[in-house]
Length: 521
Image (tube, rainbow, N blue to C red):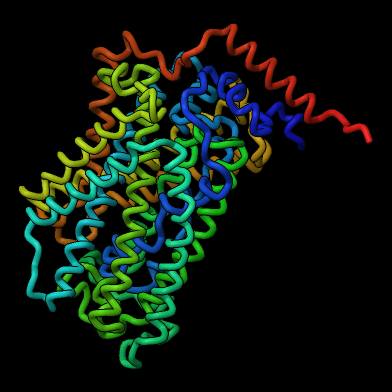
């Protein structure tokens, strides 16, 4: 089925602004992201070289090797292709949800996605702070043990750095982002080669144990459940799939490059993650994990490569972690901007403002920095408190994806009361419906796993607060909507009139007609 047959958006590079106008919005950003920058952005948001070390302890210390290797992730590229706009799936709800339900659905989706992204960005930068502190611990042979205040201080510095970088032009961000994928890939290769080349024989785990050994240390009576608890690592790594959607208004040929980058990045991250996990596990035999730094992967590097080798690779991992933070902040700020543009936030006019010189939402960037810093300050009171807030990230973001997907599956494919106009990446009605159903069922299943305590018996220190924080966020958003917001929030509303939308549609259709015309020879 061709793009013309399905009535999809055909992006020829010049009609991006017209395509955006057909969705009801005017072009406000500069489009500086090309193929390499967009692909690199999608890879960097997952940052497999750094994401796995940040979350490796949960599966490794819960069930051993097997739960780390067998993982799965699904893509949401079809919707991003159809609706290439900064709000991502939040804005897509305007087109796949019935008008009567759209304000409430988009309100819930917007708040879950926005707060989930902020928690994800904050937790990534906090993990980076822990890694920086771990370098100090390694360099002093364990004499330096960072205090909670020291971690927060490092964290504040990292937040400030990422905020300054994101207060830059889109052209600068695109140029910088192009390098991220190569550093990420190079770090994975360096870690894998170094571990296999330098690890002593006594640290090598038998090949069969890498994939089959389950050492249940969770306190749960089920090995199968212990293995499933390891899904936290992959879900944290393979999240924020829609990040390229949030920079769609800064991307040339966004309806094509966005979904392609998502698919390639998810596939590439899956392969690299599998290889990296195998390397860490294969060289962890008999080690006392998580070690002095409190992070198993750092201990594995230290025990196999020595102090100098571990520090060199850890510096590379810290650089990749910074790339995750930079990319996550850019995507998150565009979501804040998009939600505010539709009037979904307090002081929406302020947070939807575009800096006239840089043409980026500077106010949105810095409100995220402030909120993230406040989250991190909780570490001064309790590490349990800060981890409880960070736990919002994965479950909230996954449901912010699944809610629009669920509505699309039912109202566009089953009831057929809503028309889905696909983009260049289109799976077709039957395959698309099947994939949508699997995505929603998978999210429901994995959400149940991710909110369970990872250790039994439960106490205030090891309690998994993801369910409390996520349900609390959902409850407060519903209360706010029914008490007040329903009076003034109307969902993604666009910011151009119907005449402008019609003119943009005519312009885009004219360009499509020219593109489809035979060329005289």
